[in-house]
Image (cartoon, rainbow over all chains, first blue to last red; front, side, top):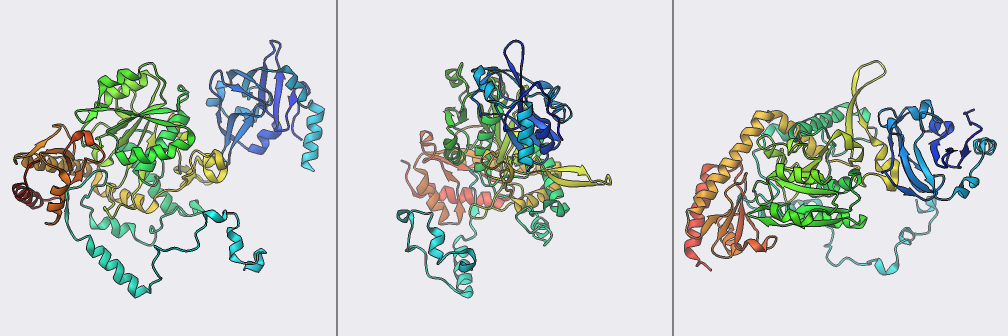
Length: 131
Length: 441
């Protein structure tokens, strides 16, 4: 069973979102997602100041098998990308919830956070989709 | 079979296509022929080409190809235009491509080559698309393209990139090269890239260092279009200006492929390591297997069409395997010294021919600095002169009046290593006679 920390919000596309004290959000992919993708060899982060609506492709994660889009779980403006991933994309596999974060956004509408799942709901979602 | 797939008749297979787009008869397609009749037809068509002596370059170049090149390339082990579907089962094929990639990287002075593309024109179009994807410092979908780039390449690229909302903006010429003073007009405007051909379509030599530095100072990418035959003599694109070009592409035909009615040829593409993930097409890499033994494998496939679908870097995921095999053998046989000697021979032949022709009344050399192709200015329309020479088995060159009307009566001539002293004597003698018979305009 993959790890699902209790303090995060989750999307059906297997992204996690962490609300920071300053109102920004950090986005990454879940333990389940990194396991399904396999070892990542490249992470393409967006351009500075990029703006996203919920559901826009914002990051491309590339494993030896496939390049996959990561969709913005909520809308917002990019304030930071995890530049360490340029040299160490495998951090996404090793530490999906900490060192392997992908982007930091200033949300355009905090209400969109409420549409995401909490940890219990996401675990249930994983269990249901595994069925 | 129809029953198996659950349809009534073959017509049903075409239901998707609206009736008004369908043609039920083909007037211009002749009736079927038997094998013997087809062979007779093809022989007569081939004979119609004759065995004229060609002084036409303009993007396709006749070089001497050692017989052993195609003797090896057409061996059963190599004689397949495709990388096989289980590519790694064919280590020999992959190694040939790997060696080819290494040679192209060496010739261009850049880091990574792909396994080839269809031809020079589509390789150029792909390079434009790649530059827009890869240049993250520019938000522009506009690209500067010099008017000295092959006119057909510009036409093909414009057609291909239009669908992605990319616009090619033309840079004007002065004395057969990109007009450096005209660049000022574009200062302050955002462009994704500048595209420079060296040598130019007109055979002239651009100030590639100045153009490259100008573009890089403005966060543009530099796309180099080069004839690989010239790269053992001219500065390779990887060394242009202070930082080098970002992408090099072009037509690989001069490397061992005969000029045969326009194809098949192959396009090449090479780039800096940092942008390799935006390069279209296949790339062969060297690796080790589980036992530590070296082997070859297709690599960086994750962005190709069969995996990434509509988001692939390109919808071209193939390569010109057989042409590349011949080119690899050709380059191996000649080696860097042989390529250099061949290139210099082409330069000397063209130089000698152009200045001999310029001694004739009514002909002058338009630009003094050229590689292995020269623009001749005539005192009368070019096409009748070309027609008269072709009557006597000489293909005199490429008439520039349609693609470069501003040059007036201009003829582009080329004498490669395949042309002998006798060929050039004959050209000069017949040209003398032809000019004497017709009047200047």
